[in-house]
Image 1 (cartoon, helix red, strand yellow):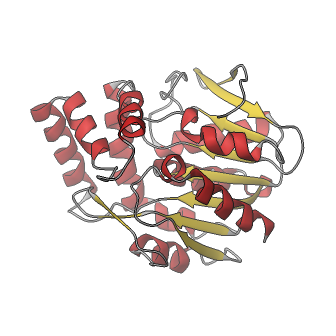
Image 2: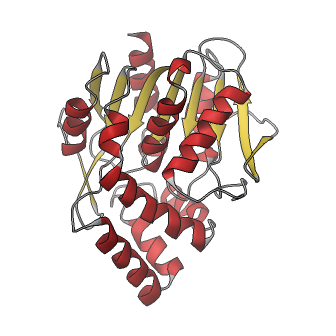
Length: 281
């Protein structure tokens, strides 16, 4: 488990943003969680990498213990907050690691502070563009939340991110933690993912000039369900990153097969080895 460390805070545009730092030496690694999650999702990586690196994990605006503040709840704001954290801590030669929505966030942060970023790791990312326009996808999210109730909708979405073989204790604890995120934050973040993918990801990803590791465990489908990948499989998202990140000197792939979406929690040792090998290369 991650070492016990008191939370730290910095303020940006009316939000009080929580982060933790671990370790003292080595090039820094900054971990960014996904939709309605928190920095605790990275506890196994923090414990592992803090032995050899300075490690930072943060709660995005409106998530975990961070407040919402004055900015919109969206991928662009999240990315600006993470970039501000890099500046606040004066971090350089950073490896940015994002999971799910956090993949989008670290790409945005790299756009703002490219000179501080050494590498990017995208853990089970996706690109949500199927199923109509962004307006149509937003309408479906709002209709589902209205018809099912937010808690039921949210729990069903996250239950589908695990497999029948997932550890039920880990699954239930993760779903419970994610369900604590306020409805307004969860809905706005979900909508922002679709809008960012529809209108922004191409331009931002094509400007990334850092090496990228795409570490994939699932293949998303248009209805948001996820199928586990096979070892060595190249998913649509992996190919998309390879073909779009034209300024990156290297786009590498790795898979963690036969599990669900919370790759770093279900197979932490494999994730740690993959990130270590990528940083070392």
